[in-house]
Image 1 (cartoon, rainbow, N blue to C red):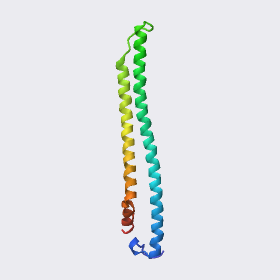
Image 2: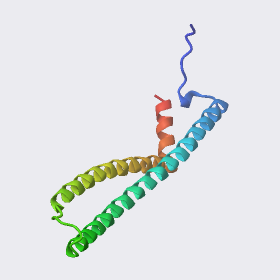
Image 3: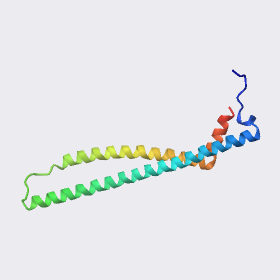
Image 4: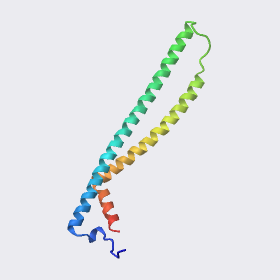
Length: 132
């Protein structure tokens, strides 16, 4: 086993720094592209949820409208229990909103990561770690 001391970034030769800098930049470029991809995927999913919630509302409105019309024309009997629909819709809305909050938090984390990479803050944090 050797007793060679592990060098900090500041202790490296110029050519060694160039190699480390190149690898760091490649990693940051990779992370930047990956974060942007996943952010886009999350944004698409958020959009799908918003369309789903709007569609669910439209379906319910159509359902009640058709049901009332059929009852007025005596084509069906019985009362529509809107309470059951309301509870179901409330549960769906709570679940979807919780999922949307989670997705929004994930998107925010990607935004933060992208911002740190673009501002150079992430690279500086890596360099600081290398100097410990």
